[in-house]
Structure formats: C-alpha cells, structure tokens
Amino acid sequence: MWSRVPWTGAGQILAMLDGDDAETRTSAVQDPKAYFDGLVADGALERAIGFLSVALPAREAIQWAWRMLLFTAAPVDDQWRARLREHIADWLAHPSEGLRRTIWSIAKERDESWPEKLLAGAIFFSGGSIGPENGSRIEPPRAIAGKLAGSAIIAAAHGSGSAAALLRLAVIDGSRIAEGEL
Image 1 (cartoon, rainbow, N blue to C red):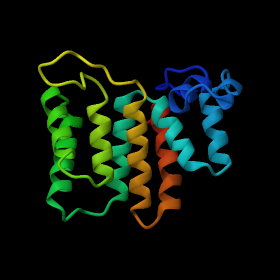
Image 2: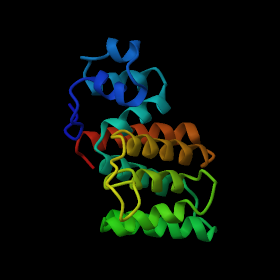
Image 3: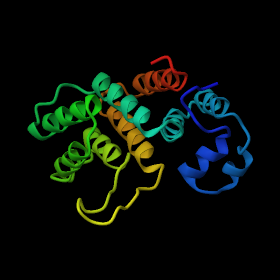
Image 4: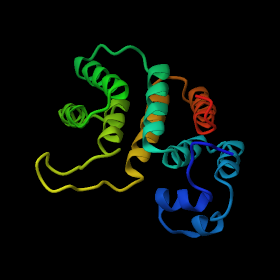
C-alpha cells in the first residue's frame, strides 16, 4: 500500500495519464502499487515512472524529480540551467507564488527541453493560476505537473549516459516516496 498515493484504483491514474481507453477500464480496480509493480516487472520503466509521477501528489512528484535530477545530472556549466536549478531549490525549500512564476519566466527564456525546464514546468503547473499574474484565475489540469515531473526524470536519466541503471534507480526511489519512506 502506498501511503502518499490518494488513488484507490490504477484506472483513476491511467485516466489522468492517458484518458479513457481500454487499459484504463481494464485496470480500473487494480491496486495502483500492484499495477506499478507489474510495469516494473515487465521492464516498462519509463511507463512506470510516468504512472507514478501522476499518481503522487504534485509536490511529491516534483521532489522525486528533483532528487533524480541531482543524482543523474552532471554539474552544469550553463548559466541558464544553473540559475534555474538555484530557483528550483529555493522553491522546494520555500514555495511561493512569486518564485513559481519566476521559475517559469526563466524556463521560457530558452527552447531547449532540458530536465530543469521540464521540472520548472512541473512547478509552474503544480498549483496556483496559470493565467496572467493579475488576470482571472486559471487552474491547470491536475495531471500536468506529474507528467512534466515524470518527463524530467526520464530526460535526466537519458542525459546521464547510464539511462537503464538510472531508470531502475528512479522506480525504486519513487516507490519509496509513494510508501512514505522518503
């Protein structure tokens, strides 16, 4: 049983991840942990990461992605990525609306899809309005932050030169977060 996953059926998570399809309906009542464990056993590690990143609350998914980014990514010599990392670390320690918007503003300065940019997107879409700062409140779809956090994990693993090993580490780490151990 995963203490940090609020969903009771894998189908609830799959509906957010993929929409309503045959797999969602077939897995509707399956325990989320059992479904995840099946993906891992089948070697579908990226799918397992995507599933768990949407299953977790956004904050936990973002913290998981940050842990994996720090573990997998080499030190950055790019000022933009270093500045983004610094702001992400600040937001994780002291989340605020202003910092959430600053992170997104920095992320949009470049077109590259670095893991840091994906994680910045996860933070921006994790809560608060995604509309203009002084405009009408616009809520993001619930699964967006998790999807971006999962993508950041996968991108960091593939950018590391040891993708297979780091994807395995990510599923272990993520499962521990879901169980409340980290």
